[in-house]
Length: 127
Image (cartoon, rainbow, N blue to C red; front, side, top):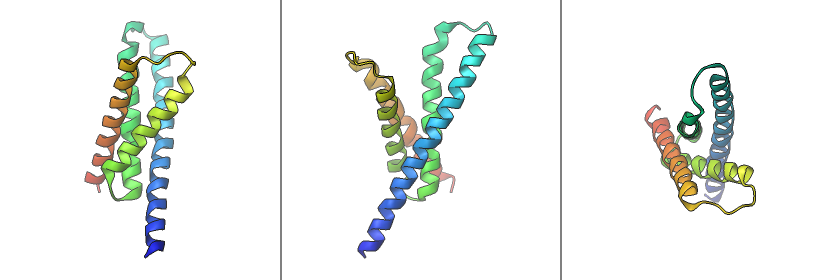
């Protein structure tokens, strides 16, 4: 019985980490396309905060979707895991050592968790 529990946790952890990898790669690809779009078109840089939020949401959604498909169980938990890890990784990579703004940080955490949860649920619904 214990062997089954260990392998189940291993599968769920692998699914979340794989979903995180998908989310990071999707985010990187979309950010590259967004940068090219802003450079080569007359779009205003004033749209950048909105477009960046959309990029983060789509990337985390895609990661949660993939995690739920891999795990084939607990899609909501898988998506929330991907969203939380994505938030932690991007916060760590982008932190300059200065004080964090609670409002902006909370918004990004909420966006990541919501998008991840929606992706996880969509991954289970698509099975």
